[in-house]
Length: 191
Ligand SMILES: [Fe+2]
Ligand SMILES: [Fe+2]
Image (tube, rainbow, N blue to C red; front, side):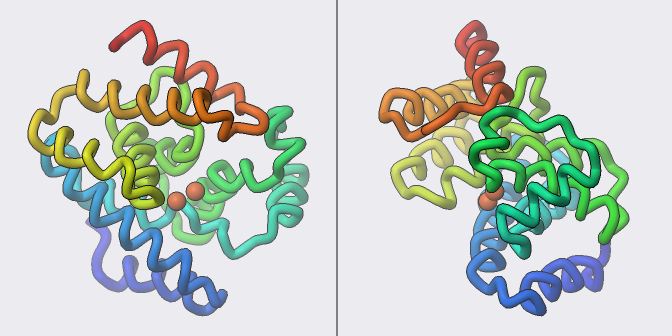
């Protein structure tokens, strides 16, 4: 169980890097994600840590993320090659491991795919993914009420599917990451 000091050290990391805006966002995501995790009987501490750390790489510029990924020999998706900021989910996972000593795979995986999701995503992955989207856009707030009320895997899959479909339908993705395409194809079969 992570104690208050560890949570405070994450928050201070954003503040010392002058990322008050990102801090506000991750606290918002944490509140939404904890609400969803409660409804789905997930571990609250793990969910909260994943939410607080999911954008920890926001202290870097996209170019720094790209250089960081290259040094780490990460395989770069064509979408990440074109839009380096897409790497932030994977870089955040590495910072969570290296700087904050996170070893729990539920937490690390949820951080790693919070923007694109991916196939075989866990409940933690989907809850952090959808909490992030709800926090960014009020349009998706109704998903929260539905998920709290129903708390079924079907409802969660439908929320994730609907969000990705919205992105495709409205041409919001200049270039889709392969993980997102895979997640969408899989969700399509299960809703
Ligand atoms: Fe993010
Ligand atoms: Fe985020």
